[in-house]
Image (cartoon, rainbow, N blue to C red):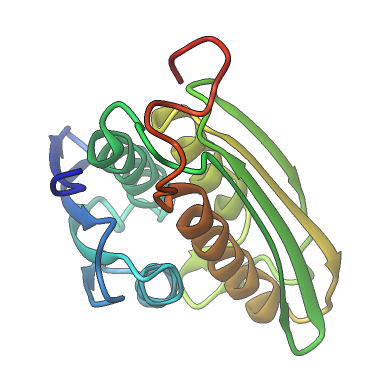
Length: 196
């Protein structure tokens, strides 16, 4: 199959980002975004998805966290798409339910080449550290559209904002890991159309 890795760089007046991902990784991560809780979430994503991930972002966090979090989502989605190339041999679908104390999160992924985000979650707190909780949906929206995937995240239960968000990142990681798994029975792409 060859290597399934990619590096994407993107520079705007608001952010300067470089992200590399190795789908065949071991969960190693080096992350620096200037937003401590966001770094923690991206490290959790890498570890629980078994992706090797390097994220460097210099953003206008003196304004707020919005541009940094959204743009990292865009670039991470692009890196995932590039690493998967033509998606030959992948299982395409992945889903999981992740508990984290009071929080229970469902996530389902379809690497179908069509962007869509279904998101159902609520947060009692407006911020966790310097991370605005309204940015959780924006981050996953950016990934779903730039990676061209169907992504559904649903909060089944939970009260603690930290637990809910962390379970969402971990659930996404596990679902994406399942969807990117190579199946030796699939010698092309898993679609009646012949492409995804």
